Structures are given as C-alpha cells and as structure tokens.
Image (cartoon, rainbow, N blue to C red):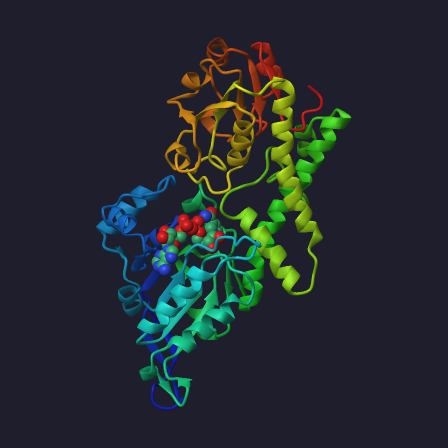
Length: 461
Ligand SMILES: NC(=O)c1ccc[n+]([C@@H]2O[C@H](COP(=O)([O-])OP(=O)(O)OC[C@H]3O[C@@H](n4cnc5c(N)ncnc54)[C@H](O)[C@@H]3O)[C@@H](O)[C@H]2O)c1
C-alpha cells in the first residue's frame, strides 16, 4: 500500500509531499504482536514480525502458532501463503524494510509495581541505530504516560552521526501511541472489530498514516495526544479491574448477609448505565494485564503526586478473594493435610493457555503449603503450568481428575466444564464437595446429584 505524506527534505528544512510504501514491522511476536501482525497482513498490509526468540520465529515461519488463540493458526498460514507476512529475528532487516514500526514487546511489573520498560527502550535504540529513512514508531505495548516522549528521546540520542547535523536530526521520524484492547481468547475478533481505535499522535503525518493502516477496518477512531492515549489504556484496564473488585466486595457482603451475588449482579447489570459485563464475582482477576496495569497506574499516580487509594483497594479486594476462597476450603475440608484436591481449570481465564498471574497459582500454592495433594486438569494450559507448579498430578480429563478426590475446585470457567456428567464425577470422588470459584454452576443442580456446593458470594443456598 502507498500513501502520500509530508516528509522533511534531507537538504534544508523544506517539507514536501512524498509517496511512501506502507510496509509494517511488528517488534515482539507475543500474544499482542502476533495477532496484530497477522490481522494487519490479513487486511492487506505487508508485515514483518520480529522476535528475539529464535525458536518462536522458526515455528512461526512454518505456520505454527506457539500460543493458544482460536483461529490464529489458520489466518497465519493463509497470510504466509499469500506472502503478506514474514518473520525474522533481525530488527535491522525489519526497520529497513518498513515505514511503520509497532513496538509490541512485554512491559512486565517491577517489584515496586512500576512498568519495566527495559524491552521498549532496547527496541527503540535498535530502531534508531538502523533507521535510514522516515519511520513512524508506534507504541502498541501498554506503557505509562510519558513513555512516548522517552521513546522519541531515545531515538534522537541513538541516531547514527550520519543522520545528524549540528546536533540535530536530519532524519525525520514520528512517535505515536496506539494501545491495544484485544482480549486473549477472542483476540482476532477483537482486533478486526474494535470498539474503537485510539491513536495518540503529535503530527498530522502520524495521524494520516495510522488512519491509513486501520482504514480497511473502518473503525471509530479516537485521535488524541500521546500522553492521553497512554492514559486511556491504563485507565480502561483499571476501570474494568475496579468493576470486578466492586462485585467481589459485594460478594463478601452477600455471604455474611445471606444473599446471592449472581442475582445482585443480574439486577444491577440490566441497568444500561452499569451493564452486565465484568460483574462476575469469583476468585478475582489475573492475567498478564490487569494486575500489572493496576500496579503501574498506582505508581504513575504516586509519581504525579496523587494517591490513587481507590485502585489500591481494588488490588486488596482482589487479593482477598483468593485468600477467602482458600479459607472457605480449609473450613469445609476441616483437615487439609493429605486431602486430594482436584483443580478444574488453571489458566487465568477460559480460551487461553496464558498462566501469567492466574489466580490458580496463589490458591494451589496456599493449599500445597497446608499439605494438600493437588491433581489438575485444564484443556490447554497444562503445558505452560508445568513450568510453574511442582508436585501436581495432571489428568487427561475431568473424570480422571475426580478419581479419589476429596473435593473439586473450579478455577477457570471453561465451557467444557459447564456440562459435565456429575453422576460420573461423584462416583469417582472420595467426598462429593465442589468449590466453585467462578460461580459456574447452580447450587440446586449440584445438590440434586448429592454434592455439597460452595460458590463465591452465594449466601442464599
Ligand atoms: N496479552 C494481552 O491480552 C494484551 C492485551 C493488550 C495489551 N497488551 C500489552 O501488549 C504488550 C505485549 O504483551 P504480550 O502479552 O503480547 O507479551 P508477550 O510476552 O506474549 O510477547 C512479547 C514478545 O516480545 C518479544 N521480545 C522481547 N524483547 C524483544 C526484542 N528486543 N526484540 C524483539 N522481540 C522481543 C518476546 O520474546 C515475546 O515474544 C504488553 O505491554 C501488554 O501489557 C497485552
């Protein structure tokens, strides 16, 4: 695809309209980078994806997707075949062949909650070292406000001497923010049909190019400055986390008063101002985004002189949900030591193999510390969880899992758990008890099979 944009001439400061080829590079081929790359290729762009992980790049070149994401492998194969997407470990190669460069590397939490931007800085420096014509560098990773400015500064500082005159850049570039809102498990659908595309830009040229990139999707575009775009992402994730913690706090009241949080959420959710989504009480949020983005937003607020105590409480409520679930299990099992506990679901949410910050980690470790013997089954995340847990017996299906168990825990609400053969499960178990951390079942249904059933915030049973 070609697009006409204003480019500063190398001689002097004259600006003229020039045609550029809109090739795209994506640095970081993880959950976000890979989906972004494949989808942008599918809507007609020529895309080069870069990753430092050689094994990952080798697999991707062969059309093998190293993560679990519905539909991604088919779309990848299709776009490899029509030559719209390629993979490399070389940022140099990708920088030279592209005009638009998306940075989609990880931004994990530091111990103090700050976002660790080491990978972002590293990539910005390498882009600078290899630039030889105009580039638009786009932050796709979730980053704190003011990162755009720092990326621009890193690029200026690291441009080779040949691209500078009297200390000033001769080579033109823009930095922009384009936060990603896709959800693992429905990532392609989310990318292809976004509620909105947010772009934070500081030049008309960057805006024009990004509008061109997303044109085939015809999305609602929110155009703003870079800082505001960066804040939109942190504020959105923090708001959703707050909604989850809000209903989880209500669930605690329901237990003590004797009310059913499912009914409370239903009654609230029909109000269009509130909405039904993110009102599922349970063992709390996890994953690679909400916990780290809430932490990073709290830290950013602190640095700007504001104590975001509301978000600190969101985090506390979330931690408490896991702790009170473990307490409930300890109370009802009486003696935890040597009890066999079967865990249905390990991933932080259904339809993904992502184990980052999954609530199952804290819950299983707490029960193991009490001497429980853990068996587990998850449809797709057992391979990933083998790097996290010690001393777990993995099972091939829920029925093998139930064999000899003193209780079952539902920690991920996979669809396939909704419709199990409860008669078969009960026969296999030593004690028929279910702790439902995701409120997947109805107490009356399970009690009719002879189970003792405990959900979250289901005070009326
Ligand atoms: N996962 C999500 O659902 C989601 C959604 C929206 C936004 N985000 C944000 O997107 C960013 C990426 O998240 P992710 O889940 O895709 O992470 P990820 O860990 O799955 O992927 C990051 C990739 O970057 C690669 N990488 C690291 N340094 C590199 C370098 N110097 N050059 C090339 N590749 C490099 C890693 O090898 C890895 O494959 C994060 O900031 C995250 O907060 C994630």
